[in-house]
Image (cartoon, rainbow, N blue to C red; front, side):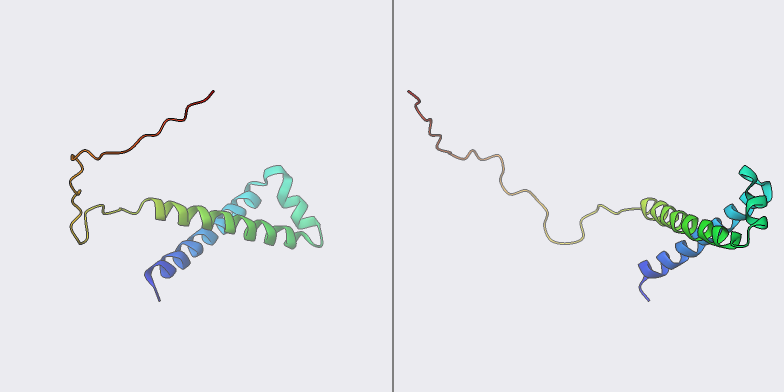
Length: 101
């Protein structure tokens, strides 16, 4: 498996673990009386599942973006001669001016 795919899968898993932690803390601290709303409704588990999935998508994307942006980039030349070609020699360029009446 390519390194980038392995890195992506790892960051997605970390993002979903963070999402599970976040949703659990939301329910535990009863923010906005969320625990009561979820526990007293017969379809409250769908709300918890949606919170988990959508927060997981967001956290996974942010986690992957942070890892990619923190990667070091090597700007050193990798091959070939990257030397400028005689740029100090003046070149004659013809300029034509239009005469307007």
